[in-house]
Image 1 (cartoon, chains in turn yellow, brown):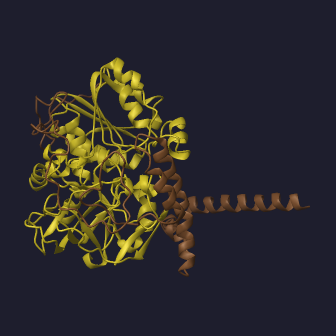
Image 2: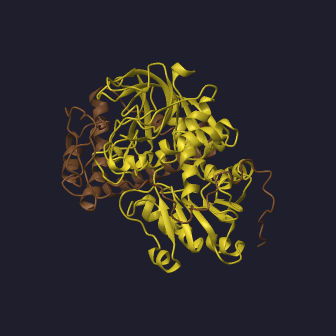
Image 3: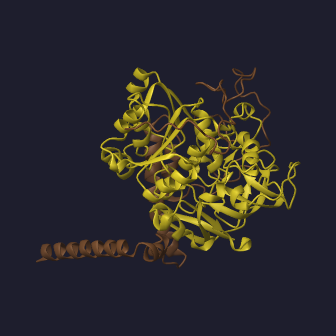
Length: 383
Length: 162
């Protein structure tokens, strides 16, 4: 089968690889029909995530058709078209029982801090991902959800990660009616977090980034304010000033390790890897939220340490909330929102690229060429 | 700066439909169970056959019931990874060797390509075709800088020989 093949930092290609097999009675094999490149894939692409092995296939946002099932599968059947959450969850462990499906304890041997994630290095379990024609899906009766009849596959594929993560970012913000919410990052997650902040009753939503075309997009898509931090002396002062010098009620970090905007963070976090990515957005979030406010972090960082103003967290009495999205928990609600026209995920998709051109797609997304917001890879059998 | 708080949200579809006054500030993201302190007490799923080398964190007692089978450790990078997994996730001796192993693995990947009779097309792998289509001036600038650096290096080396 054709599959994306990681060869090193900023080097990927399409290769022939063996088709996946059922390795566990709760496995399914899925023929991929859509697979996205996620902003967090860029952390892998840039070589920032430890234990990213050459030869691995990335891809944790995908949908497809079930073509084979293991002996213990009872809910899914061959032929079902499924949304596959990015996290691999057993549904039985202590954490899954609590609804923490992003923190499953039976899907990642290599690290206890995170559950298994498709195509996301061996630090997230060593599973080949969905940027391929076929993929092995463990615990297939737990996570995968049958795509409702009539749902556009472009909407469905964004329900695997972008929509739940953006929604949970807003949910973790504990937004109360009338709250001012500031979101750092106008990538797909930041855009969706801005849109979802309104659903929780935000009174004002402000997105801050430096990429003009994305700011323009989010301004229209999410009916929010959007500002370029390169046009500000200091984004934290900007937020203070625009909130009567108090700070925002809720600030969301939707950037993570690839953040720009602070030279020291960029050099130490992105170039020298002396910290687990550039913590610029998290830094700004802590400093621009009001005292007693809430910082919600969905931006992805590496597993080591970051330069972070912990003293201000204490002195301001902040609540910090963060997690990988619990996709399975959120899917029923979010499917409703898509079907009722409340959310329109597919509008984020700017590039539909043949799987064979995966290297170009990564480069376009990484370098933000051609006004790219969200690229989707389409395997030959789905074209 | 002017405060732009709008008063009317009727133009925003779905405004407030998920509002929850109880979600302040610690909405229960997890469901408390009576098994909070019972440790490893769940009925574990069937164990996937462990017929490849699976490195597991020393912060857990076993290999998880399912695991990924992509690229088991091998070669020099595999040796470094085995060393890393003798240390906990709390230790730099875990993560820094893994990063080093990743870089060694890149060289191994190139050698492996050569061994299979393939010369990796680095330019295609780096997506330079997309640069040519969407960022031609940037690509030309990049190539120019590379040529300049290469020329300077050649000149420097030649001078030393003289």
